[in-house]
Length: 85
Image (tube, rainbow, N blue to C red):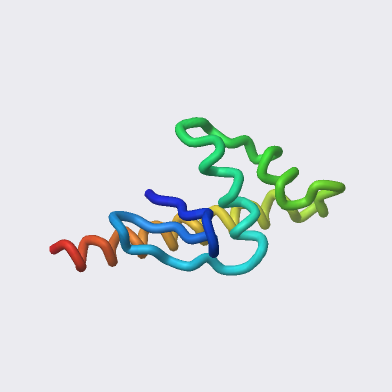
């Protein structure tokens, strides 16, 4: 997976880049490349998204957001396979 942080933050697989959605996605994805090859704790992601105080539904929101990002990565992977296949 590739991350492009110069200009508009994008992510992609094998050159098939996908623009990211809103502010929440971009905030989380700026944290992940900085921690490549390491597990990023949920509390770290909560702190990135809600630096002051997280709402009580924050863990569920982070889970939903991670699921959304994984789905986007899988879609980019399929696009790359179609282009190269």
